Image 1 (cartoon, rainbow, N blue to C red):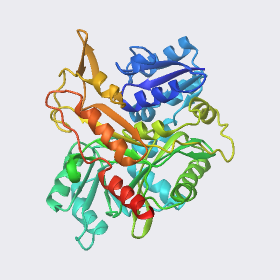
Image 2 (cartoon, rainbow, N blue to C red):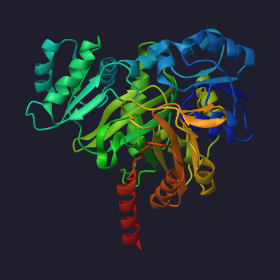
Image 3 (tube, helix red, strand yellow):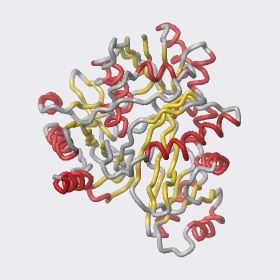
Length: 430
């Protein structure tokens, strides 16, 4: 099988790494890829934004499958263009990807499908803002949740107990010409669950948890994600089945009813609240950095799964197989991230990290005069595995600390609480 993956980040590197582990391994291509991806696939200098060039490349390669990684080309209609050219594509149409492109439309779909989610108000002007905040938080005793309605690369959300900060963020989005979704605050731990859909059927992957705040102890600004882990030893038994039954399948069914089949990854961002399961958000693609740990644990063939979904041929009752090992990833970020980032700093120590037993996913890297340098905010994602979360996170942290990137920063508490709870449970059982 010949597979073309569109994208250049950590998510795409993780996808390609897992595809390369299939037997037999497919012939892999990436557009545009990155230096890490280039070790596994043939990279083509086609920008993520150039849909015409993507179609030409896929045709020239005679790709059996095109996998679209990032959200921006999906919302722009990349999957539609490729399908119109007769190609088999894993990724939703622009109409279906609107589920991520508009949070207010996603709320409409959830309401129609009976999917449990936070109460929300969409605001299009400053004059609606104060009343909207009062409506979703009438007592004023819970944090305010303010979201940019459109795509924001995971950084358009502010959760704060400071009303002035909530208003300022909302006004900045409104002043830029966007609309804002104000939401009820959802207490309880968050879970990410990817579901593969062929437009009719749904096959869940393993759940994961990511860490959005920039600093330890969940402090600092929101980011695209500073680390993740899987499995979740604290998650209720049957959680995945419940999400498919009450969230994923009803959403896919509602979209199908509207003539908008969703073919690709439905990313369910969830909160396990005191009042039960609630959807925080939907995305229309694999999440980053959760993909790095979820695919690390997947032992079932990956390429055939995506190909079957793209062709509308997922087998009824498909169940995937998973490694019993835990996986933890730590993100190494550039100086200044998630604000104004500094790029062009030389990266060393990746070989040393991998000699420890980690694998290093490239997210924002480039080659300059033969040297590997930073080229984005989140630069590398270091993945460790082990018999439990404690050993997996220790390995991921050791690998991260073996890498040198001037001015960089990373969190040291990824999966720490879950690992401690898991170890306490093991000791109690013994």
